[in-house]
Length: 343
Image 1 (cartoon, rainbow, N blue to C red):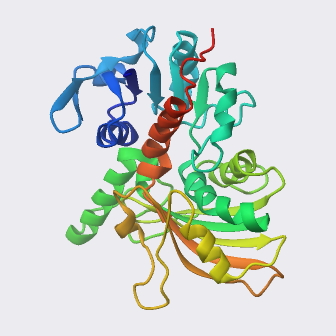
Image 2: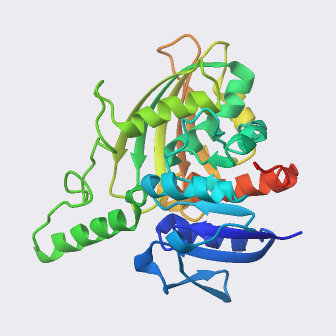
């Protein structure tokens, strides 16, 4: 059986990656539509090696008869068009932040909480978590199952592709400008990103955290366990693709580095790259284009009774966005859930 799949936001970095991932994983499609805002209508995007799709206008697109909608057009646009698509019978898998904390919308990472998909028919919408949250909970899940996590302290090193094509263009432009002595003016970021680190992603909140940091807290609890305490510091770094995270975890039960390493090696979606020698760890440059969440530098944290520290890296456009969305669609098919749509 094949499915009709509409990719919304198809001209953006994540939308293009969604089309690429659908083709690479040979998702069973009978038809694919590329959809974007009016200014992109008529543009062409690739689906696989041989198919070129002409972009259609979102505000005029009729979702009746379409099985799955992969959305990544921005939260404000999803707020308008995702419910419209869902009401038409199209199951929406939304990559924006719009629906993540809606109690009637499951927030899903297939390796972590596929059982939550059973609730999607309440709104006919499934939320894709934040990119930094996805890779962290994939690594935390096997450890939580065996040793019970109490507290997580995470510092992120997030690439500019998390801010879209415009963020990547700004890093390229500023880096080039530094070589030819052109003036540098920040536009997408609050300060110069080339050769710099910016401890500010999304807007500031009343408690001094940023919304990106807040997302990691509340999303981890919704996906994994509401009793886990999380504190995050999110930093934008001059890397084009790939998020890295330094994670320290406090457990309820004793755990050794060897036990954690063994649990992670058995976990779906995780690749352990951890040898205590020069280069025996993963970096964003190596994870770009890869599907796995890479875990390295696993070691004891002696500052708490049952603690570990480790390094976690993933391609934020793939596992952090497009791949996770396609995996949700694959899980819906595998579980036979696409027949159970909201009226």
